[in-house]
Image 1 (cartoon, rainbow, N blue to C red):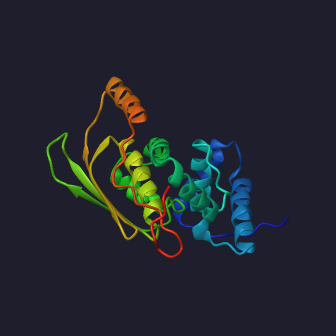
Image 2: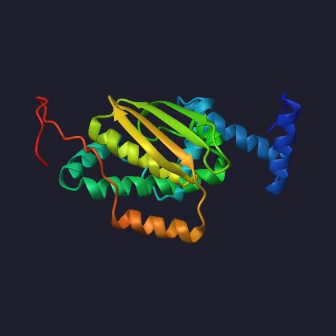
Image 3: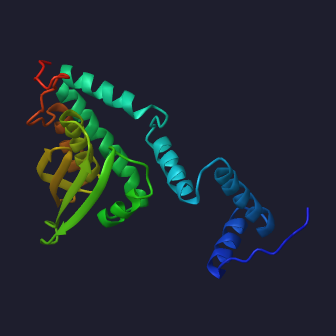
Length: 229
């Protein structure tokens, strides 16, 4: 095959050379592999902005043993049905799922500010439309944040999303002090509280034994009337 010059930024050329060297490949062969992979995505209707988020979501999903190909509508239907029979168990499981994801994300994004930026590189966590993180001043061990997530979830699903986010924040050593969910918008206030490993294990055991449940929304039927669990 004939070769042709393709001009790129010097930083890009240096990154390509470094990656090729780390893989034991020539710059020529590695660059062609990268471009061929990107062109396959573009040729099937994708765009360059989808490549990194799709890879990142796939990698994190594997790390937490997720199931990325389940339809979201199926998951939400299962959640609403389980909520009728055992809300305590369901909310505790969502909190645990959030913690597991948070522990993985903390490796990629060590601080909450990094996390906010990094979430833009992931596909939707809980069908959110907007995520805002505000820092609250405080002492060394009492710095706080306020997390605001706008969704179009039903009250039942928003309650699960709320616990999911609480679990995620716990992986960053934030202890939730206040939560509020209304009309699909979830607001959480938390303070930074680093824990010793033994203290963390003790608190986690207690949370599993006595999961926190408060202000459960009651499921509604299609006419809007409350339905009994």
